Image 1 (cartoon, rainbow, N blue to C red):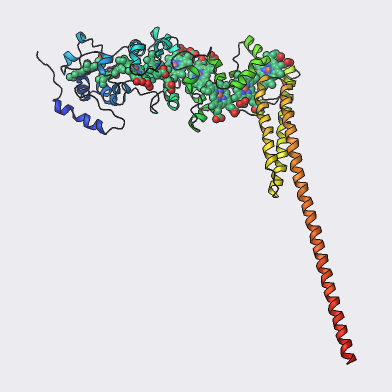
Image 2 (cartoon, rainbow, N blue to C red; image 1 turned 30 degrees about the horizontal axis):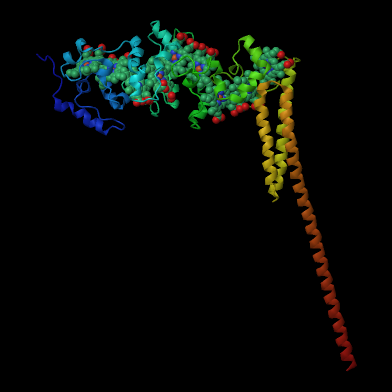
Length: 433
Ligand code: HEC
Ligand code: HEC
Ligand code: HEC
Ligand code: HEC
Ligand code: HEC
Ligand code: HEC
Ligand code: HEC
Ligand code: HEC
Ligand code: HEC
């Protein structure tokens, strides 16, 4: 059979593998794979880069190579033969064909079990329910497919910190499309979602505190499906992590009211992407309070909002005062650790009261803050008592100093008297002799 085209002698083809041996994380790939061998040496970056990236792809480490996705004959160095339709060569898969290509293995439970029995096999099924999947089916070339989020030819294990799906990398993965107004032109969804998310307390926790339990895009939106499993709608996702506010909200008058107005439970007050740190200023009737966006002056909600803020402020102030007295006593050297320990109960009450805002019930808040205030009152009294004790000790000290001085003065006078008497006696003796 005439070979019309021979790229490189076999010995030369080994050269790239020497370089690969130096690469970190790079895995040894079989030298006898003709797809790899030939593609490594091709000048055209389009057809060369897949082979260059592949040593870092998880599939290679599992014995899955070019032919397992593209078909063809990896035993032949003849391009006609290696990439022949007769050998089921499919070439570059179309955008629309990619989920099915990956699903050939990833949806096959029996096949996947041989490699990793814990790996899910519902990615394609879930993906087809997402906006991405539906759009792709309609022929949209811009919707994300498997390789938009996992890369191609350098697909990494999920736990690999360099994987595009690793928590801190996800923002950029989704952001490549969702943060690019040019790419998303023609769609009616906002492209400031990424910039907004980057201002959030969640992003800060994830990137600055390294808290991997803080949510990034896929945690709220689901990895593959429209929403994460167990959550009816994205808008309900917050409660999966913030269970206390969610339980309180469910018992509040807002639950019914919001539902009938078609408002989402949490994001109506906190927003979805730029969720910021909360504070008492969000409660009440000032400009910064969220309550006044809906409750007008003189309504029941308005009055209760003001009362809640007053309860919170009241507890906070008494907490500050009690702390100041304890600080003063400690500074003067008094032992107040027990009182300080007890005061923690008041801080806890304040935290509970802040979370209980979600009950939208001023009486419930007041009950909690009153409990807290009782604790601060006790601690405050203990601080004052310590300061009083200190004063008493000081007084006692002066009294004893006074007594000592009197005794010394008395002694000095006595000694002088004795001296004088002796003097007189000696003078009388001299006179008599
Ligand atoms: C002897 C060299 C050689 C061998 C062996 C070889 N290829 Fe190629 N392959 C090429 C060249 C050259 C091109 C670029 C052809 C072009 O630009 O039209 C190419 C193109 C491709 C493409 C892109 C096709 C497209 O539609 O753009 C894929 C996919 C591919 N090869 C996969 C494979 C696989 C899988 C194997 C092994 C079963 C393999 N190749 C074996 C030289 C080779
Ligand atoms: C896990 C499946 C998978 C494996 C394994 C795989 N590919 Fe691909 N390959 C794809 C997909 C999917 C595309 C389409 C990429 C796109 O649409 O941008 C592709 C595209 C290509 C292209 C066309 C690139 C372009 O931009 O036009 C070439 C060439 C290619 N692959 C070669 C290889 C070679 C050589 C290997 C082995 C080193 C390999 N592939 C291994 C899935 C795979
Ligand atoms: C919009 C982005 C996106 C798309 C599209 C996507 N994935 Fe994923 N995929 C992810 C994320 C994010 C994870 C989970 C990362 C984690 O758990 O930390 C993941 C996890 C996985 C896993 C590991 C097992 C698991 O389910 O947790 C596999 C396998 C996988 N995806 C395959 C696919 C396949 C096949 C497709 C195409 C049908 C696809 N993915 C489409 C983002 C995506
Ligand atoms: C020929 C079968 C096959 C095909 C086709 C295939 N994969 Fe895989 N994939 C596997 C196997 C096997 C593993 C290793 C699973 C393991 O051991 O954890 C894997 C692992 C993965 C992982 C890492 C999962 C983990 O454990 O962290 C991702 C992500 C992934 N594949 C995505 C894709 C994507 C995207 C495509 C399509 C472009 C694809 N796969 C096509 C068989 C395949
Ligand atoms: C390859 C580009 C691309 C990537 C990467 C991508 N998306 Fe998308 N996404 C799109 C396109 C295009 C749409 C369709 C927009 C529409 O229908 O209005 C879309 C739609 C969506 C929607 C539905 C919006 C709506 O209300 O219609 C959500 C949610 C979404 N993407 C989230 C994500 C998340 C989360 C990630 C990362 C894990 C991600 N996307 C990655 C391109 C992308
Ligand atoms: C804390 C949870 C959370 C995080 C993190 C998050 N989202 Fe969202 N996202 C939501 C909610 C809730 C909605 C509103 C959904 C609704 O109203 O049905 C939304 C809406 C969207 C929409 C549709 C916008 C529209 O107005 O139609 C897109 C696109 C989107 N998010 C993409 C992203 C991307 C990209 C990221 C990461 C940069 C991200 N989201 C991070 C919860 C989140
Ligand atoms: C995957 C878990 C998770 C999800 C889902 C989640 N959050 Fe968070 N959230 C966190 C973590 C972790 C923090 C802590 C940040 C820190 O270190 O202060 C946080 C912080 C917050 C804070 C700041 C609390 C404070 O002390 O002021 C608010 C408000 C908040 N989230 C609201 C939301 C809303 C609204 C949603 C839904 C759109 C949501 N969260 C979804 C985990 C989550
Ligand atoms: C009516 C407006 C409103 C709604 C609805 C709302 N919140 Fe809040 N949320 C607040 C206010 C106000 C604060 C600050 C309270 C304070 O600091 O005194 C707060 C504080 C928080 C905090 C920080 C304090 C804490 O308890 O950890 C979290 C977390 C939180 N909300 C989550 C949620 C979640 C989850 C939902 C949905 C179930 C939700 N919120 C619904 C107004 C609201
Ligand atoms: C998105 C609009 C909206 C926001 C924001 C909002 N509320 Fe409401 N609230 C309502 C609606 C609607 C009702 C039910 C109708 C009514 O009683 O006014 C309600 C009811 C209440 C009630 C019961 C009223 C009663 O008379 O029994 C209280 C208390 C309340 N809200 C407090 C608050 C507080 C405190 C805040 C700020 C942390 C707040 N609300 C923020 C819309 C809102």
